[in-house]
Image (cartoon, rainbow, N blue to C red; front, side):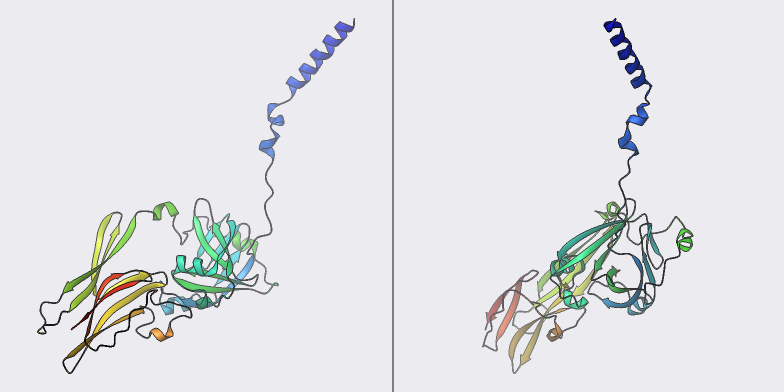
Length: 310
């Protein structure tokens, strides 16, 4: 009797378990991770100032047109002017201010009045698309770079709320300013060639070298343009510099002087940014007035020169 009762109980339990739906047991598929409502940047911001950098491709007039435009940050949308990012994903990282700005934007923290050694970067991306990086100075101020121009965004008063109906009316098909990162890789490229040649056309018996730079640009692996300029165009961590050899001739005596300056600041290197180094290796001062300088090598912070006395 006990065996019969035990058998009946086992059969009933087996029937009860088999009656349970498999879908109901897979509860992991029905659990959704909670969304983080504490966004690093949130609310409505106004563009109130800008700074042109060494790599700016925007004119002063175009940059001024951004003043007064609004930027919106929330869990559903990020917008700056006419550019939108739906269902944004926010990522935060802390970086060294000087290294980050030099590497990505060829500029120094002094240009943006940043005094902290570290800054917070908020990267915003949509579905498989990168939108932009934002430098979070504080809860009230954010900096964003658009076409090489740094725009300063200040938070609007708290009584200004984002109209959800207005946000929902924005077209779903919008063009992001930043293209898919995969499309950027390996398609467009350029190369700078520095050339030096001995000047054989001059009347003087004193050696003289001519320097020039050739820029070759390609799009989709096809060469689309070749440009040439006098002197050396040198890419450095802080942007493009121009290097020239200026020759002085007084009373039959020749002396060469090497001049290096940023393209966006002209030959007056006295206005260089504080702490900026022209070249790591100092050029040896030569007392002789009869000195010819022959450039042998140029790098980011190093120059090799042959001094010829006659």
